[in-house]
Image 1: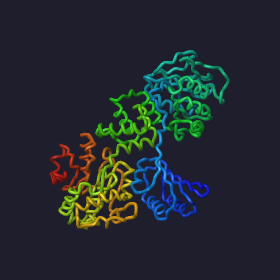
Image 2: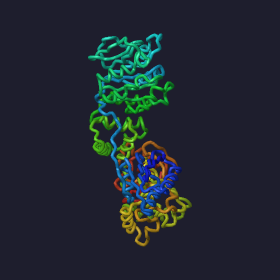
Image 3: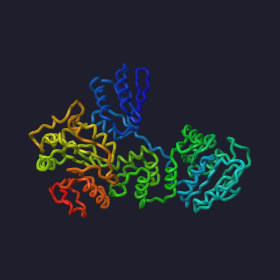
Image 4: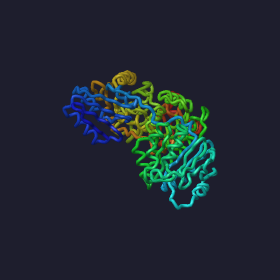
Length: 555
């Protein structure tokens, strides 16, 4: 989505996800207008399609227009810098309440429509170290039986509050009908004051009282309901550093409470019921150095479906340390919170975990042997299907494609290039190289074939080079996760170099099984020189090249 604003001779442009072809047309039209300056904010977008980069190059370097580029994404900033653009990178801070270890009491406020949500929460959490208080608008003549209903779903004690009662951990407390619920000196206080916000009990009065007493040790969950009771105190809660979650209104029939709360802007997280439960589970966990990574990876899999649990823990630990240092997060539980409940931060963590170290024709000796390998095995083939698994930003894929082109085999080939990181896949699909990278590639390629000129496979401008269309169109880039996704074709050759080394032995077995099932009989598997074939598959492959770890499927 593209938004733009005019300020005299300045045009300010903001990009937000998702971006479509109509936005590119608007961008080109804005550059055709007689502004003296343009300011483009790419915000939290992770990568740009080739068409945007081509437009920017034309306007900045060919037409000499004054265009300021801003991004909050370090990876996009680095990518554009490599292509010669001047970019302002603005570091953002995680949008989180933090200090989760402080929380002692959870207060849920809602009306009748919140009942089923409250039951679902109670059914799925434990409260060993927490107190749960529920303040719900109740019909005037309704019998107080919600404690009995909730008791069917939990082993915790559920009780209506009594005036002057001491608060105890591990108990679920309900505000009684026609009484306001407050707190003083660790004791509940029931008040007969008049209605507040047309309600008694009033969620607002409970929010105010409990936040005054507990401050950052309180978590408030604004559940579904009519009216706006509770919402008028959210600003006060946030000033007290009370943590605030709003129920996603798409799961509510009575929406006015949560919509008004959302529109106020005074909250930390907007979550559906599944993620509210996940958040409360996180609050209850005792997390230290010994279990931090395992809990994080388990919860990432539960929330996002990405399974890093079988990666090498030493690699995960190194990159988590970098992530925490980069964003100034000191506590383990807070780190898990920002990764789980701030999508921008999850993507930043995701980028840290992804391994993207590659260059065109890296290890020239391997590619020299690859020329012989292709000619010996595929010269007479009618079609060739190759899978590059864990292709990263695409340099190895393009290297293979160039060799196929040079040896007149690309026209009968199709290369499937996959990675679990969507951002690097978009960069790979663009097919751009900086001149620094390209000059290294030329040196590498000269060692592969000194009689051929790499220039004929690329289009050049003054800032960067781009792979030619006839090569690019033979490569299909798409997302695939080796840890959880299945086989999708039958290949002549699979290339997966320097990826398996980051997996533990269990995941390695799973990946080799995937590769085995994805190869034709007599097909080839190429892995990194420092990687080993899993023991369970040594009788199913024979060595084709011991030096460069090329194996042929024989069983």
